[in-house]
Length: 61
Image (cartoon, rainbow, N blue to C red; front, side, top):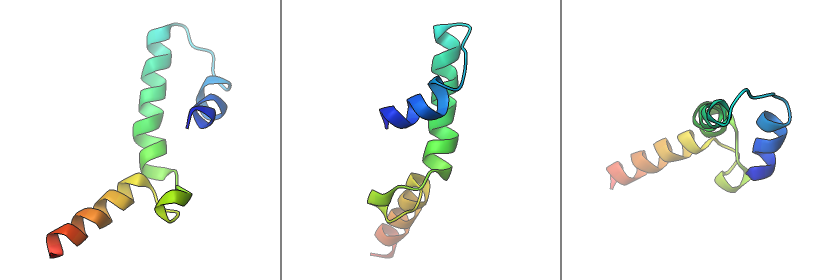
């Protein structure tokens, strides 16, 4: 994941402060990485979708 953060956020932007960098990285992780970015380990679905499916399966039992 660190390589992805570097390639998609750090190397493409200039930050005015460390706080701005932290904010942008956090926002990217919450919105892009967890909601949109598909993961091969999760069957090519996003972590958010994986969590929803897992919660539905647990509630059916």
